[in-house]
Image (cartoon, rainbow, N blue to C red):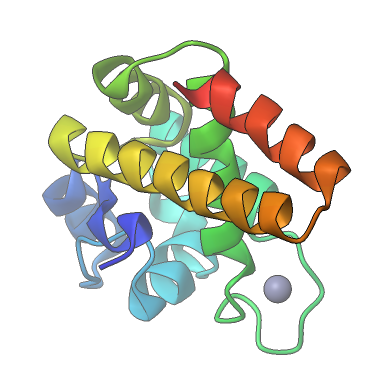
Length: 150
Ligand SMILES: [Zn+2]
């Protein structure tokens, strides 16, 4: 399962009752993207929630794909956001705190930790492949990225 399948909406029950429409707890479930983040119900949300919902939509759902928001861009952008927080030196608990402040989302720190471990392993694999191919430039760039994550 991708990390984006393990990102949840905080105050879910509260938001469901404000919107008077049910949607799943998973932030990247299709129906959540449609109902909460792209829905008509924004005006029904309290100010603090509306602001964070709008921030999420602006930051992760701003592509022009025909299939948006079901095009994969929101997930890709969110993964980049998580890696950026890691590169700033944050650990899993702090990353969860920041996503909760920024977007009213949460995840289990253990899931974030495995995601970060997987990302480092993926970069290691890419680095090895680039090395094998004699592509020194790519290998070095990947190594730089990896070093920022660990
Ligand atoms: Zn897109």
